[in-house]
Image (cartoon, rainbow, N blue to C red):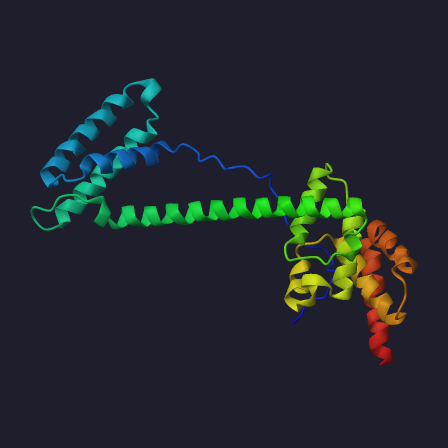
Length: 256
């Protein structure tokens, strides 16, 4: 069933982030496991067992010192030596450890690659949002924003412009998006994009769009300047504007 907009409430997309390379947090346990794997490469079960004994001794010794009692890396190294010892015990005699055929290691590497790709995609998206925000800002200054059709992702660009303005509502951008949504312009020609807009735009913008759409059906050819009251009503009383749009839609349906 197709959802109607504006909704009573809405899920808001968080403001677009600033374009900045994310810093990877230091993970002592992760470092410890990597160190063990490098050391263990080429070891047989006897060598791994000896290294495991050393790791157990180190953990017991460190536990006696208050400043080393919470040795995350040491415990991770011990756990990894224990895992490798079990791995080689279950393997054929004479097998040596090779991280390249360790399923656990390969799964971690695949997860790392996926996470890195996701971070890169986030950076590209943030850069795209920032560039589009610059473009819309320039169009505003030229007075040609209303002649521009919105693109997919401009809802996040709206949030970026609001963030840049310190949280102030960008009335002209909101009005531009509402008019495009009401008239099915730009990417809003796609019903799926209009459906998605319910969770991406604020209730006032959605209410404005719904009211504009119904008023345009009621008075075809009405100039947008004649409907300026719709923006004021949607901004100050979005629930009332939405209710009015729903009422007009019902009246039109009953009349037909």
